[in-house]
Image (tube, rainbow, N blue to C red; front, side):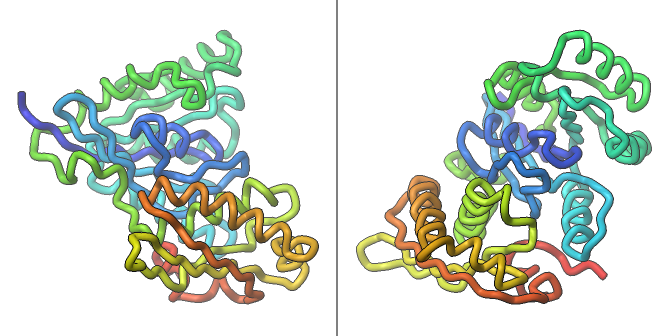
Length: 297
C-alpha cells in the first residue's frame, strides 16, 4: 500500500477540547489538558498513525480576541499552525454551541481555501437536538466537507475521525519515525507538564500570570535526567500561592509533574523547582523563544 502523510491543523475557540482530542487521536498524552481555557500556548504537533497514513496534528492555542502581548503571540501561533495544512479541523464545543466568540473564527475560516471539516466535540454531554441545530448552522455558514460528532473524553467517534483523516492526507513518505508521537523537545514537554500541574492544582487561585522555564536539562550517567525549572509569576502574592504553606503546594506540583514526566520521557526524572517573581516576564523575548512562541509587536 502507498504511504500517506499530511498536516491537519486543529483549531477552535479556547476550551473546545482540542488538546484532549489530539491526545486521543495520537493514543497517548502529547498535549497538556486542564479545565481552564487557553491552557495551550504554543503550536504542538501530535503524530498519529492509522494504517499507512501518518497524520501530523497541529494542536494550536485557542483563537480568541487578544488583549496582551502573550495573547497576541498565542493567536499568531494558532493561525501560523494552519499554514501549509492539508486540512483544517475546526473543533466546536457542542455543549456551548455557536457563541459570539466563535463567529469571527468561522467567518475567517470560510474565506480559507484549505479543505475544512467540523468536529462537534463533547457530544456525550450535549442534547441531540442541540447537536443537530449546531450542525445545520455550521453547514450553512462554513460549508465544510464533513461534520463529525465525537467525544474526545470518552473516545466516542474518535476511531471514525482518525480513519477519515488518514484518508484525507496526501500520498507521500512519512516525515517522522513510527515510534515518535510529537515534535516537541523534551525541554518543552517538561515545562508544559509542570505548567499543567500548576493549572490543575491552582486554577481557581492563580490567574494566567505564570510561565515555566526549563533552565537546565542534564542527562546523567545512570540514564536519568535532572531538570531544573523556574516558575515565573508577576507578584509576591502569586509566589506565595504557588509555594503554599511551608512550600507544601510547590512540592505537590513537583511530585505530580515528575510522575507525569517519567513515562513521557521514558526515564527517571529528578525535578527541581523554584519560584521567581518577575513582573515583566511577558516582555522577555528570551522566554518567548524558550516556550516556543514568536515575539509579536
